[in-house]
Picture 1 (cartoon, rainbow, N blue to C red):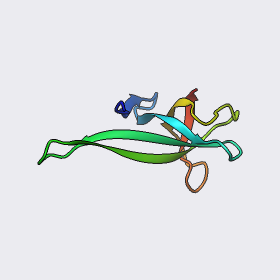
Picture 2: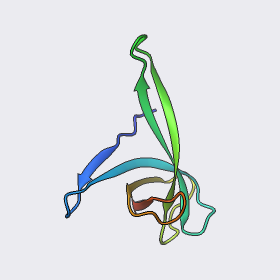
Picture 3: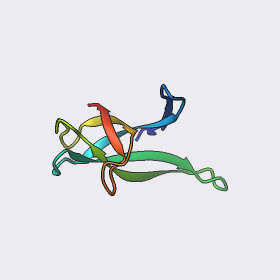
Amino acid sequence: MPAQKQTKAISADNKIIKRFHGVVVSAKGDKTAVVKVDTVKMNQKYQKRYTVSRQYQVHDEENKSKEGDKVTFIECRPLSKNKRWRIIEN
């Protein structure tokens, strides 16, 4: 399982914007998709790699995403209680 990296971009007003890559787990909500991001971490003592998963609720304006799609999303202003991300690439 490949490691999903967090990359950072700098916007026009010199703010750092987080960017993630993940897989759509659920796209049942209207204009909302749940995206799973896997990160590979390493135990410092035993040098063993393990995978940590986290799910994000992401804004999908055009409802294009389907389950299993690989997407890229960035942070944005809060859109609801849990949505602070929006899809930029399908």
